[in-house]
Amino acid sequence: MRDLKNIEDIVHLYDAFILDLWGVVHDGHTPFPDVIPTLQELRRAKRKVWLLSNVPRRAESVITHLDSMGVTADLYDGIMTSGEATHAALKNEFLPAWGRRCFCMDDQSDPSIMADLDVTMAKGPEEADFIYMSDSPDMTQPPESFRPVLEAAQKRGLPFVCPNPDRVVHVGDTLYYCPGSYAELYESLGGTVHWFGKPYRAVYSHLLAQMGGADLKILAIGDGMPTDIAGAAGMGLDSALVTTGIHRDDPMTPDFFAKYPFKPMFLMDKLNW
Image (cartoon, rainbow, N blue to C red; front, side, top):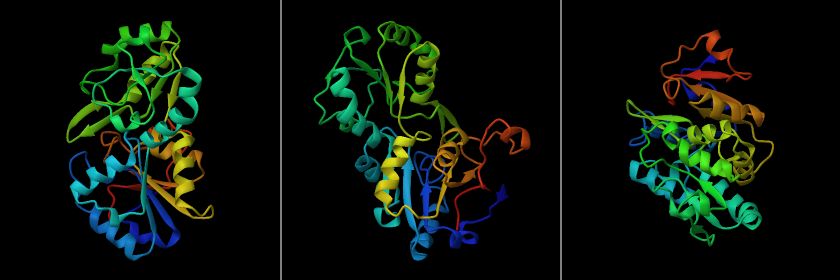
């Protein structure tokens, strides 16, 4: 691993960059200070820039959100989300096989994922063909608070569709639980989870198909070892870990990296030119 002070030092090595959003581009509310100038420089350098997020929403809604932050569409080539990959799987694979009765475990899901799928919302797991979760009603609630619902679903053998495999995320200094933490508990109860987003291959397959050019030399930049860096490793991509995101409280020591069977090529404090 090499400490990387800025992207300019290695931009000549890559044709394209895949950037995580939350923790690399923005903090949930605003872009980090160096991000927009860095994106502008990457455009000037004629490098492809794609955004890859575990957000459980369709790409269009994320584009609108980014635009409101000042991260406008002229600063990147495209975006892929776990929500897009989830929508495709529901439409083409899961609903024809399972049925269309969905118990949504939260009340904040992006309706666009289900909008054109002719899904019926069940009142509880006892009426459902599958369960789904993209946000918790209160993201500060630990997964254990949902154990009774998850146990009821597992007893019926319901599949759990998880469009966001992240376990936790920081918004400022506050820690929030993501759907991946609830899905992880469901698996521990013996339930079946269908995961979408990093590090799983489906979302990368969608992204790389849209990027075009199988021979592109790509650097993936993210702040999560189990998601961004694992996903890049699984696809054979070089990666850089931003150390001030999810792992902000973890010392970047050999003992830390020994927990993982993969490593990033670079370590960065932040995304900057």
